[in-house]
Length: 249
Image 1: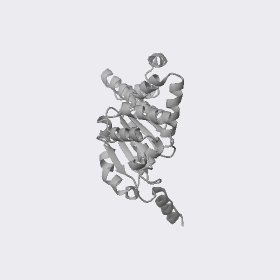
Image 2: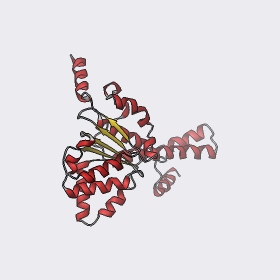
Image 3: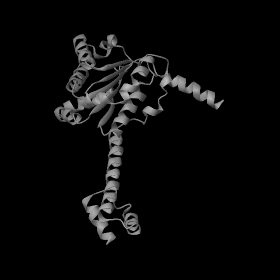
């Protein structure tokens, strides 16, 4: 009978029941559980398994380059403005409100670590997240346009509650890339959240977009009701390295 139950559970595609079915049946007999208690217990296990599988799947599908967690951040190493805002950012309310976060500052101050940490936390809370570098995003946009699939690409990205666009400013764009990125980010403005990390202050964004009018319009849309966080400071990585060297000596 157990094998027959397992067969039906597999056909129904309900994860989390078959693994502990034998033990649950034995426990039900041992403690004289009612049918209702038995059914409740196996459904709770199935629910917990599905929830955990969903969490793992969301993190995998987000395409993070590596895993960094908010709890791993050494708060004292972060720039002052970030330390002040961190508690508020960790609530993830900015996602429900459709607000952007712009982390702007010199290299090595924790921008990518923080953005990945917030992204993973969002995955854990049930939000759909996607991580990309700005350069990769522009390449995807260009390929989609050349294949006449740009609309499909943009619609696919509407499902993401949060997009992390890393490393704005490391590579300049041509006119097509600038216009495509402008349109893409504008479509999300005030509807869905985007985290952008950049090593350039706003007055230098024209260096990569090469269009003063477009740059001004993009900054206006991205910063409206957004968290703009000053990430200038001493290198987070150098501080970690110094600490590691002190511990190992």
